[in-house]
Image: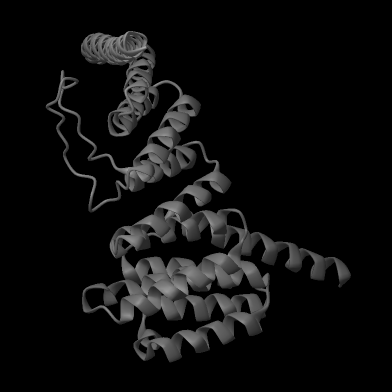
Length: 344
């Protein structure tokens, strides 16, 4: 009986040892599996890293080649090929998520296309502007920038920042005499300059807007801009000399807008005296007053004499912009004179 019990205990002990050994082996196997999986993951990460590094190196090499090619095309004055090469360069920068480099390349492409293709130039400038704005490159922040990393085959400068590029677009439309679009982009440039407290540049853009608005016969818009600019100039000792010129421009637009409405121009002259009492004694005030009298009397000869008298008194000829507007008033006066003659 005792032998049977000892045999039973021995079998149980052996079974327990077997189970413990099996558990140990199974646990070790699991650990080995985890270790192998970890090593495989590390190997795949290393391979991916190497592939990314290789792609970056290849892209950097391509950027260097394209940069040199673009410069060579510029030196050869092959502007279209230079522009297309800079566009390829910008796409390479975008693939590497380098918006600054891409924006600069688009600006370079635009400057090349300016020589041959205004439409393509404007498109490139717009893409450059959008990218510069995305990374916050306004006048005070967009200065010389150099990238010395693995992509640095040439120094990249973004001194042609977003606001200046917007102004470039406006000037291209101005050159094409597309005044509607010129106004759109000068307004955008003025807003951006204003954000950066670049008041002189903002005022320049706003006067361009007034000029083109008058060309498009939106005289009220021009008047508001000129009168506002005059008010600002009065508060600045360095710009007070501009006031009489600005009020002259506003007054000429008032003549165009009124189409013979003497009351409107006289009311405007009253506003200008209130704004600047010294304006009453200027040649510009006398010109506007004499033109108003000529319109009131429906006398074309008086109108022409007033202009000639002003030019001889100031020893300067009215510029083409003002002359164009005054010719509109004179033509309207002639038509009215002829109509009255027919009635009589």
